[in-house]
Image 1 (cartoon, rainbow, N blue to C red):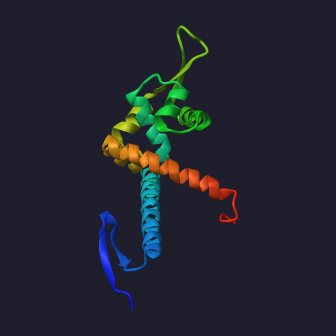
Image 2 (cartoon, rainbow, N blue to C red; image 1 turned 60 degrees about the vertical axis):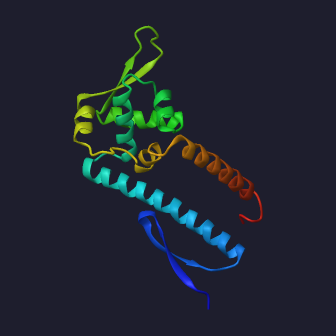
Length: 174
């Protein structure tokens, strides 16, 4: 029987670590990383759900309000960039916030084609009552990491995405 010991992994608790072959160790390490990614995603999801229950607004909408309060007069494309989302998603998001009375669109004075977004009094009031962090925990946690760690993480995620794309079309994914 293989010896089992426990190792502390952050705030997530203890995970059993089995002494195994290199292949088994590599698989266990991969599963530890997968579990960490799931925990991060679930934490973010729970936070967004709590925000929606407490304030009647989705976490992503609240995050958009935070971004717009820090950069009033943004265009939809600038909001999309600030939130790392697609422009069509930012457009649909701003539509919902306009309909809810939290946001307004203002035509540019010089270029009438340009549309700028700004918070309404209702949007400002909601932000004043919202907890901190008012938006997703994962972006907040990522912003606390040093540049070098973020660069390494970005590169590793890029490699992971490349492998996923490679496997998507192969028999391995089937």
